[in-house]
Length: 200
Picture (tube, one colour):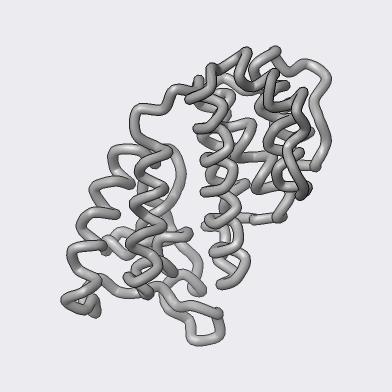
């Protein structure tokens, strides 16, 4: 999805991390860029994540600048995005709980749009973004909310929360939920570190 971006996204030197122009990629960055561009088109649709010239926005811009770290993080992001066991609304609830905890603007912007496309109501989304638990979550959404909330809150995941996740999603699905929250903690920290702007 393409859209107009602000001057800060076009490389304004006053921003913390100017957008890297594809023409300026190093030999180390080029293969990672190609893989990221393909992955974005396959798995990250419905929100602005690329400029018209192909420059990457969101967390991809920081990751492409540091391939040593961005490459492994991107592999993990692809792993949790590819062939998920969890239903799409469940994933989005967990992602938004994580983004809300970190007050990560770009993550919330992107995944509110994705969650709308996956059937979550505006009321649910507004409540989650505000850091509160909606009263009308489905059973599976509620389990995802509780597990994500407990994990980002710190400490050992309560046994009853783990059991509820295993009951709803199986052991592999519950593990996937944990990794999903962990990955989006990393995404949120990346976005917050570099003060990544939300597109206009």
